[in-house]
Length: 428
Image (cartoon, rainbow, N blue to C red):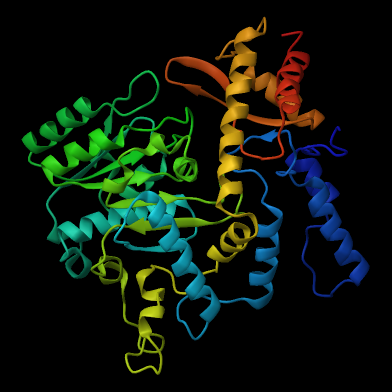
C-alpha cells in the first residue's frame, strides 16, 4: 500500500520563512496558535520514517524508542550522578556491558554514551594521547612530541575535525590509501608509519572504520590490529554505522578482529533505529583510564563520602556536565523486541541492499555511477516522492548513495526507487 504522505514538502528557505511565523514577540499566543506551530513544523519537516527515505545513515526511530524519548524528556534526568539519575545510570551500565559482550571483550571494559559518533571519535583520540602521554592533561601540548595518527582515505571527516580540535593538527592525520572496495590497505599503513617515524614524528593511533560513510566498507581490523601491536599503537574502530552487524550471526564476520581494538564507537541510532542521538563510546581498558583522562573532580557533584556506591557516579568520565539519558530508549527497544528481532532487522536491511544491487545490474539505463544525480535529486525533493543522497567519489562522477535501514522497507520499495529515478531522469 502506498504511503499517504510525501517524504518532504519542499520549499526554498525564502518561501519557508514566509510560510512560518518565526519571529519572537513580547506577548504570548493562544494555545490554538501554538498547536498550529507544531502542525507546521511536522508538515514541513522531512519524514525520516517514510519508507522512501534513504538519504542519511539513519532512518526515523523505532516506536518503542520513541516512547523511551517521551519518558526521558518528561522526567529530565541528567547522568552525572546516581542520585540525579538512578534508573538511567544502571541502565547505561547494562547496555554498555551488553555491547562490550557483542564486541567480544569477555572481561568487560568501560564506556559512556555521548552526543554523536563524531564525539566518540574525539574521545578515542584524546584517550589514546592521554594513555601515551598522561602529562598532556596538566601541561598541555608542550608535554608532547609531534604526534601522528593514521586513518583511511574513506574515513569519516570527524577524524580530521577531532585532530584540529585537540591541537594535534590535520596535517598530522596521515591518510592511508584504500583498495577498490574502500578498505584500508594494511601494507600501506605500515609504509605510512615508517615514513612518520623517519620524519621524527611519534605515531600513537590508528582509526579504522567498520562501515564507511560512502561505500559502506569494512576495514580489515584483524590485519590492522597486527600492525598496531607491532608498533604499540592505539587501535580505534569507528563502527558508528557498521557496529549493528555484530548483532547478526550472518554478518558479524565483517568486524572480525574488533575485539582486539582498544576503543570502539557504535551508534545504535543508525541501523538499529534507536533515535537521535544514541552513540556509545566503548573502551577495553578496565583501569579507569576514561575517568582519569577527563575527570575534574567537581566537589559539589562527586563527593567521596556519599552514602551509596560512588562508582555509579559516571559523570566525571565525560567532558560534559549535564548529559541526556540516551541509553534508555535503546534499552527499552531492546527489551521490547529482543536480540533476535534486532538481528532480523539487520539481516533484512542487507538483504534489501543485495536485492537493489541485483536490480540495478539487470535494468537497462542504470549503472552504479550516474552523472545526472544532482538534477534528479532536485526533482525528487520538489516532488517529495523519496529522498536519496548523492555525491562524487574520487575520480568518479556523482552517484546516488542508497542507505537501507528500515525493517518496514520491502522489495516493492526497492523497485519503486529504480522506477522513480528512471521517471525523474527520463528526459536527461
